[in-house]
Image (tube, rainbow, N blue to C red; front, side):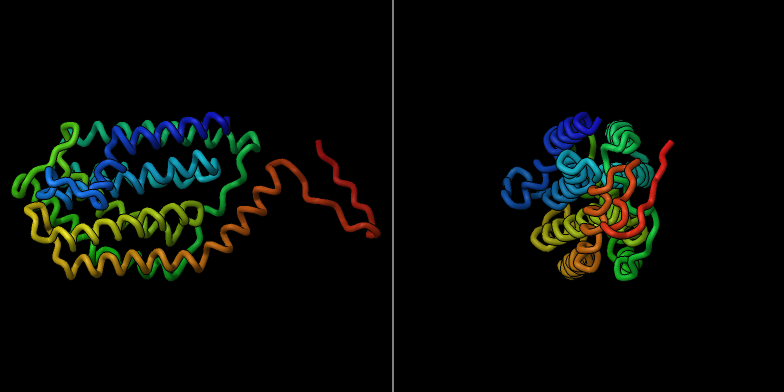
Amino acid sequence: MVAALRVVALLLAAFWAMLGFGVIDLSLLFFPNPVFALVMPLEVSWGSFVTFFLVVPLATTAVRPAAFWGAAGLGVIAIVALAVGAALMAYPPVLWMIAAVIVTVAAVLLLGVGGTRRGRIPAAPPLFGVHWLLLVLALAGPLLWVPYTIHAAQSFGVLVDDVTMGIDHWPVQAAAGVAVMLASLTAALVPRLRRLAVVAVAFCAAMIGVSAAGDATTPAATETVLWAAWCVSWGTAVALSAQTFTAQTFTEEARSASTPRGTKTAGPPEGSPAVVNRSD
């Protein structure tokens, strides 16, 4: 089951990176193409959303199967965000993308939960636990991302269009804003998803912010350079907050991984009274 999870996660990561245009669109930020110069913010928002909410979590799961909870959780956030983007603009073509993400999440959950029940994957961290610094940053996030989402909805059909596989980028740009807000709150409240959620939020904010600053004069630009500066700063703060929980998380995961499900802890030290553990 674990081997199947690794293979499926890797194949799905490759699908979203290439056929889903995650890495392809995001790469334009580092290797600009004059053909897309007028729509760079739209390309980067699509690329960031798909790469950090789907590709990276899936690739991580292929390497560390215990990360499947994070991949599934961020996938659910992507589904909700895409649904909001489609609803804001009454744009049905996004539904096929939502369907593809649903299939992705279902496959990861099916194989991941199966591996956990068989004791092949360590037990997940607790479902709920507040990280106060992340919570403060998450509550500040809407000041940046609500305007970003609204501007995307207002620009649909007004500013320049950018279509990939029959889907206009504007609903996906709105989805990126919604996803970042949801993921930042999830990172603050759900330890099981915290690490991958922080990665998604921090990198999306950084990539989108850098693009907004560098392409503020393009026809597809919706935000100012000042907004971009605040966006990158906020994303950096989210990334730095990871230093307050990463060491503890690694310790807990190592302890969990060293004690497979269904096994008992070691007995007392030599010389101490013996204790007999019975198992039925």
